[in-house]
Image (cartoon, rainbow, N blue to C red):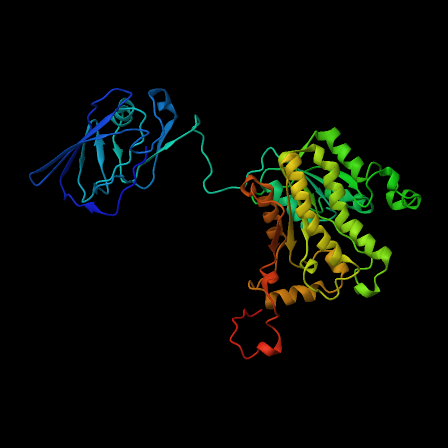
Amino acid sequence: MHWTGLDDVIDPGPSLAYKYTNLGSTSSSFLSLELRFSGFFWSFTLALSIAKRFHLLKMATTAASSLQMATARPCISSSRRVFRSGAAMLHGNVKVVSSSKLSSVCHISSVQTFQQSFTSSSLKMSKFVTRAMSGSSENKSSGLPINLKGKRAFIAGVADDNGYGWAIAKSLAAAGAEILVGTWVPALNIFESSLRRGKFDESRVLPDGSLMEITKVYPLDAVFDNPDDVPEEVKANKRYAGSSNWTVQEAAEAVKNDFGSIDILVHSLANGPEVTKPLLETSRKGYLAAISASSYSYVSLLKHFLPIINPGGSSLSLTYIASERIIPGYGGGMSSAKAALESDTRVLAFEAGRKKKIRVNTISAGPLRSRAAKAIGFIDMMIDYSLVNAPLQKELSAEEIGNTAAFLASPLASAITGSVIYVDNGLNTMGVGVDSPIFEKLDIPKDQH
């Protein structure tokens, strides 16, 4: 049981006697305290009514083994004034306290248990708390950790070690998840070769010093749902030679055959063949290609993997602020594809949530110097712009995206679904660029870079 002290206390002075007496049975325990100071005598009996008066957990002698004492802040709770002490020595049933204040926290299942726990040895009671354990005495980590042990994740779109997909895989692995990845077929051989040769070993290092393990790499081209969708020219393309079962449907079936199920699905891929063209100069083919690879691919991925995602699982994708703000240079229909992706996230959250209690979210990530981003041609300018104008003047790291993904995939985010989570140092909140000359006379705090 836990009594919490009040700020209004009586200072009984330097000499105080504290006596515990068993006045009841195992079903009803009483605590008698005798306090003597300067000729005054206080005697009162506290009826420890478990459920009614103190709103405590039901305690029976059979539950005594599940209670554990640990250090914490001492306190006694009462509707009246209470006594506190800084230190106490307990010897058997009589405790003599030499301090200006008395404080005691007791966690007992019965009076007998209380007596046995203190008569066995002398304990110093400067700080003392009791904690009910659920039948286990093993050490538990402090804080609020992200624990994905026993979970399995499939990350689609990992082809090197410096993009957001890789960072997400690392964070999920650091939290204990088993990692499977889907790699674009033309990049598959180089990626697997780099893994085998240890080229990525430095990037694989996790916070505990171990290396991230990728259980299996699957070939994947998320533009094609099933083998019937693959045109002959793609089948004949030498970059696809030697690979098989790489459509979305086949990849999902392969994962099911190998592992049975997954818990986390991550979509970390996009492509716009005409991304450098203004929208007015984008062809229909280029526009639809951007939508297909960057937006519908997520719908297809979730559609085919949904049957093997365990109930309560999580699905994530990556989006960009161009979905809702004008980013000149981010063209070719890519801004439209990201807008579609965010809209689809909300609809998929409803449908997947109702069908299998799967949560669906997307992370709106700020600019990163990844190999894929360099294809746009102005990523360095976007990073510089963010450094100057974002509320947090620092360069975004891939790890920050990965950690956000780990949180969203964990039980800590169990009520978050259908959401766009901005991880961009706050750039999305800005209405103007503060580096504009029109603001030069304002006293705007700036970091020196």
